[in-house]
Image (cartoon, rainbow, N blue to C red):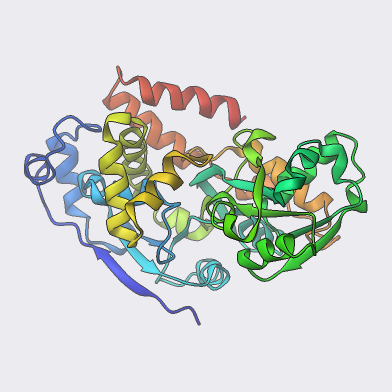
Length: 370
């Protein structure tokens, strides 16, 4: 049974002027007309206007969602967002799939999402959280050796099962003509044990999220690659819900995504960097230096775009590697929704026709979601 602790953002019937007075955000994001505000306020407390977004304590990978909340954008868009805490992504996906009312969205790793889908779940990926974010590690004396992908043939590689950095690197190795079946996978139960396996010589390389890869220099490991160098913008964490929830709360999901897009624009402005660091740090309890390093030093790209093509490629890579049951007949396209994101983006462009950021996202959407 998933244990959930609610951190609730209750939406009150504030006028847009009052919101701006409280937050001081007179120059950020899109404007809301009084007519649309009245319409939103009328239904703001309904269940179908509430999005429950699961948060793992201490995480900052969902920084755009955290910012949208902290900046008051959910209130301005008229959607009620709650943050149930969870330590167990599998239990959360089970709860979403089974229609439980205590959680609607998980925004973390794509591999569990795709595994549930391959096993027959009605989950739907409707947006992004992050792209890239993985790293390859080795002992310092082996870094130059493993810069050459040809040298991966026949080695031992440590990872937590289904690590996205390995899935993406495997596809790249195949492109380079490497016999990936010759690589012996050393699957361990934690990121710390990946680092230990490499440090002890039980594996020549390891695959980790970047934020962990930089934490183990004291035991004698270094980064070989940030995997985004090998495959730019590969899909990582996605936002996932169920088909039923997406249908029942369609309008709320659109407003939720609009608020997130506005927060993404705020995040993209270098002038806001200090505030961007402070808000996720306050929300998560993480040190500000850790947050700054994670968001602005490591190669982790925060993105809301669904990236349909990237999901299709990633799903096929998992399937080809034998990660799913051989007899799965699931069509992954039936479990990708791009309409929510596109509707939210179109509405913001209509409200802000001269906003270059939203135009850029439309161009990206058209490229990656055919």
